[in-house]
Image (tube, rainbow, N blue to C red; front, side, top):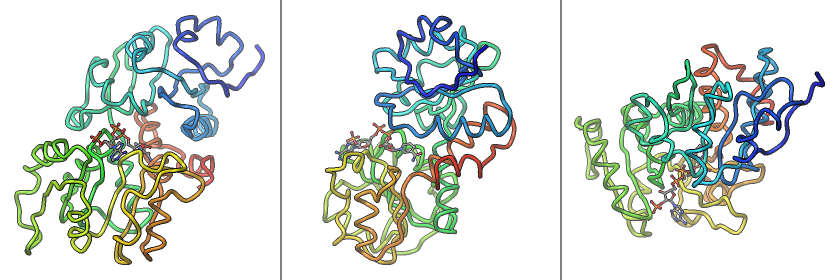
Length: 310
Ligand code: NDP
């Protein structure tokens, strides 16, 4: 058979006619990422480098699956002999209702970014929180337990990051979201983690705030790390989620958005004299954790990092 690596973007129509579509593809595609849009995803280059390095005879492809197609696409997975998939925007929350089993972490977060197929069963997991934690340690040489953290966004990524901060007993956690009720609900879900008075002072350890300049300005002096877990910055025309004038040099800024050039948030942080990193390191670590779930072996982290040109 002709060796043919895949660089294509597949669709639900391709999945429905899979054997004919991938007849010449070798090694076989048995992993992938479902997203909409998905063309920009860097997961295929990272995971394919890892598969090749470990001599695992599989390929990882990108699948453009629209929201109304997700249930069908997922239902085909077991029949296609897939080992698993990753889910990205906007499928992480919808996938919760489509898998056979959810692990405890994915259940708490309410979002799935990794599916493992085990003896015909779809198991939903989430590696975003742990990937974030490793990225913060790598970028800033500090552990979440020593940080006062402000998270912007309470969607799938925001919830995963907030739960991780809570589980690692961070010093403070402040949650801001455009829709305030979601930040409040997330804070309510995490209240059990913050029973102890770790920080003495005028500010509560766990706090939901409205996404308003005055509220954010007040918090700046009481946090160490600000995380952007919204899509603000994905478009070139976006401005920073927090303007440079509100930021301060003592801050660490982590933008979950990744891009080759500086994201608007990273630019604003640099302008304010703060340290900043974008989401490539989180992408790397959440992907390495997915690999470990699929193959029960250590991921070749440096190979994956090189594939992302970090
Ligand atoms: P969701 O759609 O689940 O959540 C989006 C969140 O952003 C919501 O809280 C939403 O607020 C908020 N939001 C959306 N648009 C705006 C806006 N214009 N102004 C203010 N807030 C806004 O997405 P995810 O949580 O899955 O993903 C969020 C981002 O995180 C993505 O852009 C993705 O790139 C990044 N990400 C990066 C990863 C990495 O490995 N680097 C991993 C996972 C995610 P509301 O509730 O009001 O709608």
